[in-house]
Image (cartoon, chains in turn brown, orange):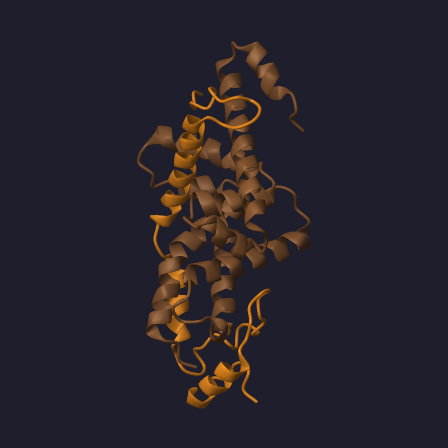
Length: 182
Length: 93
């Protein structure tokens, strides 16, 4: 069947952020790109169920998220699959200092539970509203809000711990942060 | 390394400053990937979507509906009428 050029263009426009979502979810560029490809193929196979004029971005993100989840269930993995290919993909980035910062941030992000990570990325980086994120994840808006809050708190803890350990001196503060860590 | 996150409270709500910093880092990381644009492999993939039988995608993968995606029989049937012969995809009886 012929696909409307406008639909194809709409899909193409979503690819960069869809890819960023996939990489953020699984932390492995090759696996993420396979996930994006699988998503585009699924979307294409089911293009009839896409209503023109509705949110192509949310539709593709939903498909990718469900694919990732079902694969994740199969693999029974608890942590993101990181192999350094993400850092490899950052080679083009100009500033060394921010690259290090991104790498640290990415590592902390990978330590979050999957549901918190996806909620945070959808709302905090992909530009979706809480309502859209809830639709994509198939849960209540309140659930998304609480996951985002927990994700932020946990990230702040993780990043603070790293910096305190690097700086060394403040034992008392470190003890405070260490409390309640799993 | 100094990351600037050490000012937050260990329990309860994060300060606005910390939330802002986290948001910036998250967006920065995400946008770095977005800036890479569309890799050739996906541009080619979507290009092939429009090609007639033989170059299409249906032969490679089954048309398995993703979770939560509805199909609409009426629309499906209507589109089938206008479909290019020989595409051999789902839904044609």
